[in-house]
Length: 465
Image (cartoon, rainbow, N blue to C red; front, top):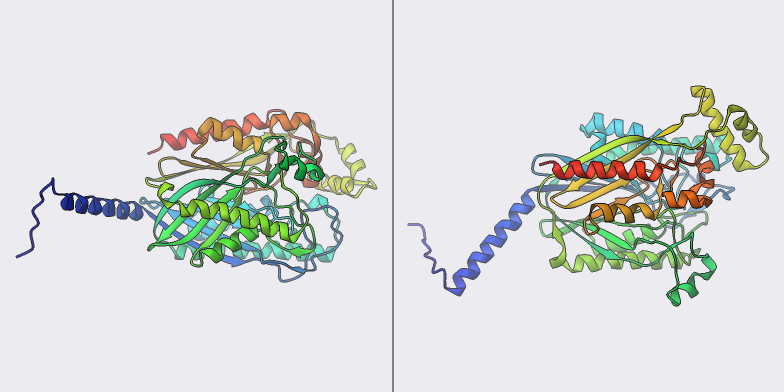
């Protein structure tokens, strides 16, 4: 005869056992709702090719401080809907690379563009990649060939690492929370030399976003993936050694302290934020350690982390982001003949458009992507180098405690200034456009066009079952 248990609902032992059974059942149910798979591949260039990040560079890389990585995290809900985070230790990638990679992922793994996000850490000690920031550089044909070969390698390695993550899919428990790190400084409002004294006296100015969003994946009781972000330029280092900069060191620290996990970093809206002071390897290591410590503090407080339950919803679209007044062909031809190498590089990039299309486009196909993970968490990803005003505003408008906003996603084509920064001008608002080969600064509607699209996406995600 099977054993029978008769419950006395008032008996403490019975109540405790019942609670334990229900709790275990709920955890198992939540775990069963999701699957996750994670993988990584080393993308450090095998040859010493030209580095990106700074227009002052005048020679190729000379060595390696740390390896560079492409990492993929695949999440799948109970219905089979998937999303893929691909994080890259790169300055940025442009449409010449993202479009073929997305096409391959769709052909090979039936992943729609709305399901995949390509996230760059924006480290300034990484290689030049394809056409990204091409107007900034004047390297020779030999280096151009090496840069093109490296981009072609990424078109193979990135789909491959996604495929490996898909093979690794298994039941998972997902949870999230937000920590804090305070080394980012608004570079438009604080002179670099003054920062130590300003920080000491509590006098730093300008908007910042010090949130450190953290997503943890646990499988069979072990942490297997840690996805985290921070809104700050990866510009501590400017020498000629490959390096992930502070995000690379943060990932290294986390993978040391969680040896069965892969750590993946995404850059927030930090286009006007710098890690200050900087310029020393020790500082990059320090900021990486501080960021890793902020993540570990969240992970150590497991009881406060919010479990992701429910379904996955994804949205993606490209909007026609408007430029301001376009230059004439005559103006571009004059620019291309300038003795200033940056003006000349800018002009040559624009002439390519004239030769290809017969005109300059008045708009750019700007990528805006939003995901809802479970019932509450909204993950927004924006193309370009996005200033901090965007994340602060979107969190206010959507939900400060459950909205994450990444920049440098899918296509890094230019700086994306808020209306405030656009009107103030300066590097982020205007002059940086030439390094990206864009025809002019953005139109005054840039902020409203982007924010409106995100809000509409978020509304649809919340209405979906």
